[in-house]
Amino acid sequence: MTEPITLRDGDTAVAVVHPRLGGWLTRYARQVPGVGWVDVLQDDPAVVGRYPDRMWAGNPILFPHVSYNTAGGKEGQYELNGTLFASVQHGFARRVPWTVVDQGVDFVTQEITDSELTRPSYPFAFCHRVTYRLRNGRLECEQVIENRDTAPLPFSTGFHPYFRLPLTAKGDRQRSYLRLPRATRFNPIGKAEAFFEEPMAAARLSTGVDVSGTVFLGNLAEREIALVDPDGGVEAVLNFDTHPAYRYVALWARSPEDPFYCIEPWTALPNSFGRADGEVIVLPPGDRFQAGFWIDARNASDA
Image (cartoon, rainbow, N blue to C red; front, side, top):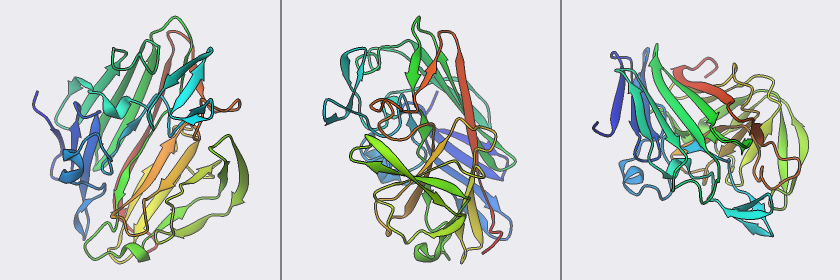
């Protein structure tokens, strides 16, 4: 098998996946009527070349937890049954090689299982599969997590797509915006030891607003968010309407000048392992967790 793997949906869409680089999907582009090719996700060879440092491109996979955990007053670790385990930001999944188990012209299925790379920070037997597929120009993503242990499997999971901004050469980052549904904003207290909530009406959020501190949304009235490039007449869409396991969305960019904007579907909030009320999924032995989402680009509906 040669890497990277290029997926094609005729002459409509293309995606690039690096299984050995943490299962990292680094490119998704498609034809948009009247516009031409649109690179939906930030695709930067320099970022790929410095893997696994600052993976600010594509769609990194987050597992066995999203964001960070704290235990014993220290970030980057969690406590389980009285034992402290060190665990890097967003978990190990994006930092270990994945194995291709099936592929075709327009799809690839890859997996990781427990190994000497995972057990020091996560002492469980598991199989985690992710399938990327191009269908009618869309990028579809499905994840399946199987508990192969004799004990319950605790985890939180999600993805970290870096949407290119602006989406087109005609676009202006400061004039672009998110179209957000009615939701609840969750604001962390301290190092996410707790959160306080505030209602948020459906809104257009300018991508010129600083979200470097990360905005956490939940209880979304609709599980779809659009990133609109009004000058280019294009919008990118993240939809997880059929997969309510992604209970939250994180919005993040390093600064209002960055060439990307992250809209991240997560099953939990930060410090999920470190809070008594953390949103950890506990999978019984032999059970499977399944979820997914799709990303698309289309002519803007309200530009």
